[in-house]
Image 1 (spheres, each protein chain N blue to C red):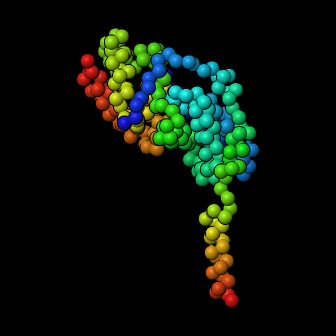
Image 2 (image 1 turned 45 degrees about the horizontal axis):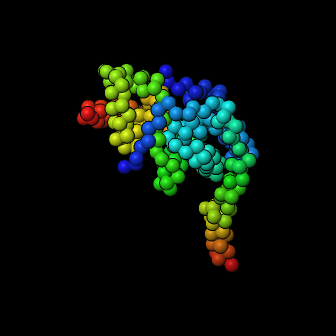
Image 3 (image 1 turned 135 degrees about the horizontal axis):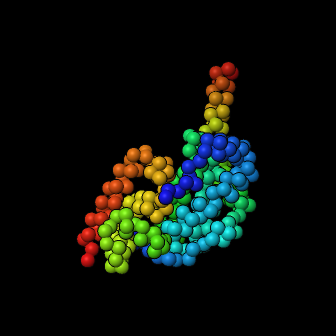
Length: 189
Length: 59
């Protein structure tokens, strides 16, 4: 099941556009957008970072950056969250460069089971360990695609909007990464 | 290449636990420190530049 929270009706998008315009005129009016997206941004950062205090700092910095640059934001009929996720990705990379946290992948056994069913034939304990090992061998941008598509269940449209590429490009790149993941998996003992 | 740490079945935070961490005042305070200052904007230099040009042309 895909993440339906991202896909908003025209009325909700219009409401969001008004909130953005209000925030451009008065920073105090950024509050509704902050409250609406705080949890989603926090979870996005938390799933990729090990230290909880740094997760809070990075999440806070995402909203500071968004508010500071909101005058540059142009509404294109897509949810504001895609811009926030893009800032979050950039802030996370900065935090890793500054050695404020370790690149982490948080998963539960249910998600691992779903990925095993979808991508590999034999869902044995040995193969689950191989999958986890294979994930650590991916490059960060490849891992990001796997996380967004398979762990967070995002649509290709959303992935494209967050990563700044077309929906079709997101689809093609994800399939290439899956092939790469399978190759790594098959080479592991 | 980054070292990647995998956490399986780690601590799951509830919606309430996450939302209790919200602090919009802190965001506003940080924004005040970082907000673009008028003399650093293109608009400001545009106005100053145009005014100077007009001054030299007219006088």
